[in-house]
Length: 305
Image (cartoon, rainbow, N blue to C red):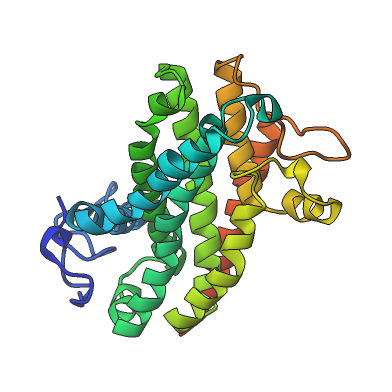
């Protein structure tokens, strides 16, 4: 276990501290197996592990904050979904409204903690903690990858809590279905985290980040098909939805459900010229979006402060 178990984020570390990300290996770890690229790789992996461990410790230590973030999608699913289920006929959606809403609420659950990674990057820069991290003998791209990995894991962990409510919306606790949904959430969490980091590396104030999120995230969420079918929107909205990564994430989760539960045939969310893209293509587009965003953020982050 790393020393970060007792280290607050605002307490700086130096490269000499063996618990700091990327700290030099002990003097005894030399020789053929302790020099060159193997040693360098160990430093990089240890830095990623330390940053992921820090995020997991924060998740475990902020239980009230985590519960409040989970409360919002739960209320949408159980209260709003339960109320509208009596008003929206099943025939119009192909499934009950709560079942239709479930993938969108999984998306909402992983969205918030994934975005918080970008906010933490900005606050770490303002507090000086990021400057201490940059002193570590690892590449800046590795530090950014550690932030992304930590955000992906914490977002997926919170999404897994809501996933446990699948039975309340009429979905079976089928192991393969749960694995497919969990895999979809990991992919969606990675993409959103990478996009949040790509935005955060370009900003210096958390207030600006919050303002931009207010302008961007809610329209993206409503154009994701998580709350209502996209075919009910005007034509121009279909074009925006086709460029919305959240729409592909919601559609991916919903199609995982229909793949394992044949009687739950919800309407398609994304269509290209009247045809629905294949499931592997949607997953590939999500992955490519996250990778491109992370590579761009790493290139921007590698510039001197």
